[in-house]
Length: 197
Picture 1 (cartoon, rainbow, N blue to C red):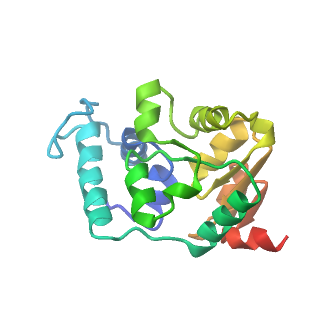
Picture 2: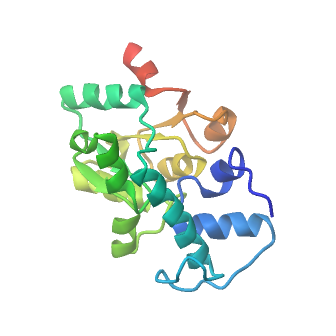
Picture 3: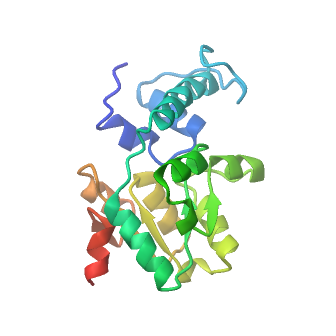
């Protein structure tokens, strides 16, 4: 069951809640595991155990300072804030808060809907639109008056399914066609490209 981080991660895991990503990847290989519980240890051979093992690796990377900041995204967020536009982050990651703080950009956002919030509220993950819809609600906006910026295929599909006014795909790994196929209105390689329009 080889895992190609350049292809499989973006196809099966990226943008999905932890257990959903594990389940989707394993299904692509014809493998099923018992669900287990969110409290399963990282050595448990369950969907949640595998997800928790992955999470330990992610937390270690965050601790080591391996959070990659995209300067164009930071520039875009700063410009949106300066223009008075409302801003929320919607992420499947339960580590979203830690990532935002490690990247030094938490203050650029007004609301956060992440894996922790989704679990607490019982919101299904992407490609379902529920987390995006909750983000719009927290900002006091209707979806048709919001834009979604997404680098994951599941996230683009969620934005389209939620009836958002504009869905922008951010192609950092050569998946522009897949982002368009999943509902992106526009695809850019860096959010700074949008500042020139």
